[in-house]
Length: 97
Image (cartoon, rainbow, N blue to C red; front, side, top):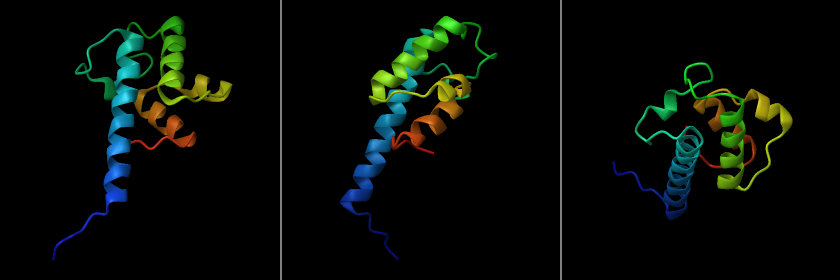
C-alpha cells in the first residue's frame, strides 16, 4: 500500500531539517569546529573549548539563528547539543528529533 505525503508534511520536514542545519552551524561557529566534527555528541565538559565565553557565543549564535531570546534558565541549562534541540523546540522551532 502506497503512503502519500502531503505538501504540508514535506514542508514541515524540510523546515525541521533546515533548522537542524542552523543549530549545527551555530555550534560550529561558536566552537570554531567543522560541521563534521561530531557536533551532535557535544556536551559541556566533553569539549575543551566549551568555556564560559564560548557558551555565551553559542547562546548568541542560537538566538540569532532562530530569532529567539533564551531565558536565563535555558542559558544555564544548555549543556549539550541534544539539550539545545530540546530548548529551541520550547520556543516553537521545528527541528528534527
